[in-house]
Amino acid sequence: MQKIDTQGFVLSVKRFGEKDLLLSLFTPEHGRYVGLTTTRHVPMVASFVTVSWQARLSEHLGRYTIKDAQPLSALYMNDPQRLAALSGLCALMQILLPERENQAKLYQQLTDFLSHLDDEDWLVHYARLEVALLSAIGFGLDLSKCALGGPAEHLAFVSPKTGRAVSREKADPYKDRLLPLPAFLYKDTPATAQDIKDALTLTAYFLQKQVTSLPPTRLQLVKYLSK
Image 1 (spheres, rainbow, N blue to C red):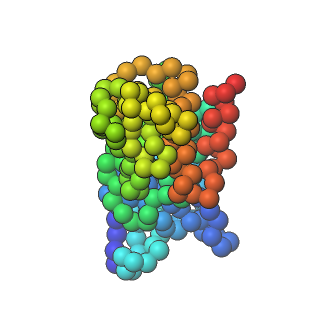
Image 2: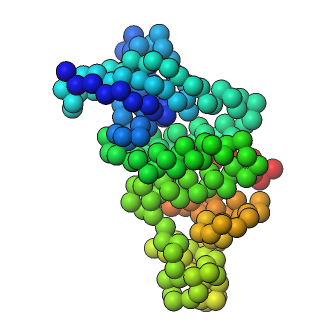
C-alpha cells in the first residue's frame, strides 16, 4: 500500500460517478496530483488542504482523505478582481502543469504571491507568478539581457517569437512587432496601472500559445483592470 501525507492547493474539483469527486491538488513535493475523494467533503477551488493520499500501487489514481481545509477563495467572495485572479490561476495551473512532476520552486512562488494577496500591489506579484508559471512549464521569458546587445538596464520590449527581451535603444526599428515589457517584471521598481495591463497582456500572449483559450476568469481579470 502506497501512502502520502501532504498539503496542497486545490486546482479543480469534478464529480466522478455518484459518490466521488476527482480532486486535483498542487502539492509542494509532487506537483499536480490527482485523486478521488468522497462527496461528503467538497473543498473549494483555491483552498489549502491537508490530506492523506493512499493507493495500492503508486501509479494508481488513489484516494484522498481530507484532514483540514482552508478555503482561501471564500475570503474574497466580495472582491471580484482577486477572486478572478485566483480562479484563473487555478484553471491555468490545472491545464498547464504536468501531473506528478515536482514543482517545488513554483509552489514557493505561489505561496509568496498568496502572502501578498491583501497588499495594495498584489497584482504586481500576480503578474510575476504568471511569468514563473511560464518558466515552470519550459517556456520562460528571457528577461536577463537584451537579445540585440543593448543595455540590460533599459529592457523595454519582448519578442513575440522568441520571448527574449530587447532594450529601448535597440527596439526602434522593430517596435511595432514587439510586446511592451514593464520594468517591474525584471527589477524591483514600482508599477503603474498601465504597467500591470502590459504585463498581463505579455504573459497572456505566451500563455495562449500553450492553451486553446485562456480561462474565462483570466480574461475577466483584464476586463476589471480596464474599468
